[in-house]
Image (cartoon, rainbow, N blue to C red; front, side, top):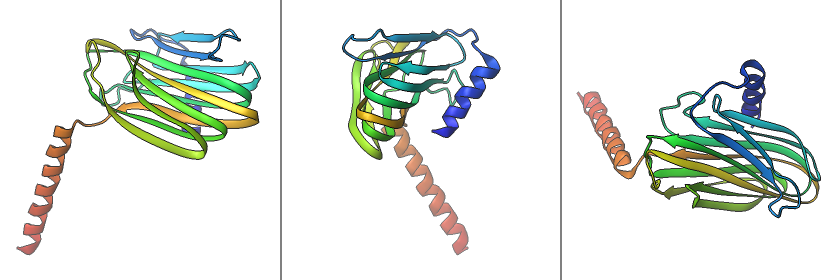
Length: 207
């Protein structure tokens, strides 16, 4: 958590916003329309953030990182949302980005939280739910794998929607992520290769 906060602060201060073809967006709202939503968009370096207050949450610091825009990580799409906040009430934080010419069909959704209330997560591809995690309480985490093909492999949207609920004033934080995982065939090939390498090493030792 601290690592991503440091990345967020240092890069925003150092680089500001740069031109990019993707549409990274973060939205904060109360889910019932009682408060005006905060919407921020960044066609920049795959990084977006918000720091301030929202409703009865006196402090909200949240940010999102989109790969491979941010660091070209293996050329695979990955979306990461993190936040720290204090206050009372309910709040939704949604992060979304579009991806071009990438066709992964196996995704991993992850939520890790330390909360004095409850935290839940819904991950989606093209508005279709891939995974639902939570509500989680205390210090815990959960990972869910899913098999979802994008409706249009040449241009599709990934999104993370975190729901935070505090029935009393408290301080909480979370990390949430969508990332790709190797397809079953790839895992079989990798496993076979490792077995073969193990047998080769064993035979060499016998000689």
